Image (cartoon, protein in one colour):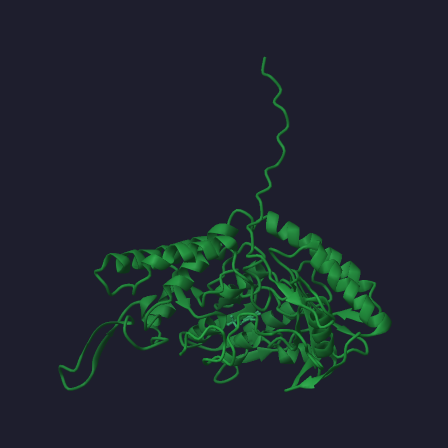
Length: 452
Ligand SMILES: Cc1ncc(COP(=O)(O)O)c(C=O)c1O
């Protein structure tokens, strides 16, 4: 007889810690814990990432070029980071992981490698729009529904050949998630490849290049809790090996000579071909450590945490008089925790200044480097919107503080005075100490005079 085993509680992995937010001063006096609802712009490091960088610092040395012990350690760190990031993203065995500065850099690298016309949507962040505005490329207007937009994509691909379709994985204005596997299928059926701007998707959801059929993917470490200056372009080797080097210089080349009077340059294969100059080993290591820390939680625990907060935020915004969350498509059902909204009668810049100055809340305002989309969604070319973005480290108290502050604003207005200073809304006057690190004027006037 077999004994009946007791039911096991599901193991919920703990979310990785984010470096603790500082206390920030308020114009009305006192200070509060910073409520960072601006993670979509740039996220603070995970504790594990900051610790890993600190652990590496004693070994820091130039990679690929030194016989010294630290150089060899640093070289190993860089190459292991490449493997780790590729695995985290489900890269195919023959894909290349090129370290870049950020998503913008990665997409510009791809723009220099693509061998034909590119099709993108007009709802893109400028990083995935401006590289495609010149030459043979085409920008497809986004339709009111996702279904119509995908039909328009199919029609455009049937009407003329494209080498590449490029889309955002998660919108940086609305957080909406286009169906990447379906788009890959549409692109591939027409003989095109698919590139995904995953700057906003990667911090929130698992990405699997091989399973989804994504051919190229770009992301930024500073949005993935690894703000140490590295991003990546990951994808198919052939275009990257055939392309002119993204940055011509040391490291991108096998041999150079003037033997026949003419320069004879043997460019390296990718990834080194596109990584000219001294690589950012600390940035790469930080990005890899973020991938290691996110790997156990990115399928379930992190999205579940975020969904609960997102529901709280959207339900709460629905009760704020005059608040209007933006969305691109009427028929999307899933989104990440990125919510842009307007508040009737309150300029977005002033709302953001008020939230910071009176409540210690960080949000972004403006057009979020997606001018065509935000102008269309707000029905105006001035002002833009306010954006709250959630992620690891966000608490229910952060969301509630935002909602309480918005209710206060719409009920009785701000308590302080605000005006436009140097083109931005700001409290006038602003009594807060905005130089807590005592850097003075950046020269030698601070209490830390390292530049002396
Ligand atoms: C969707 C999207 N793509 C690209 C970028 C550009 O990222 P980076 O400034 O790191 O190059 C951003 C930044 O906000 C973004 O949200």
